[in-house]
Image (cartoon, rainbow, N blue to C red):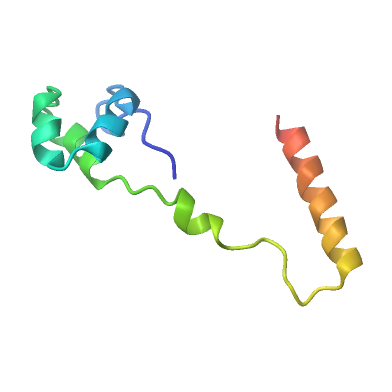
Length: 85
């Protein structure tokens, strides 16, 4: 969903490089220009997929539910977000 903050294998910080790699037309060459030498870090940058847009089109509320049950679900999810913070 979000760009990987660190390489899973060597724990190198990668999040500051992700946007530059995604916007580049030739991603492999951009990774080389940024000085990423380890295969594990290259894997993290080149194979990460941003699913935020794809998943945002799915609703969490079922349209066949009555309105009063939908409002209860919305309140519950809002309360859960407050608790999580």
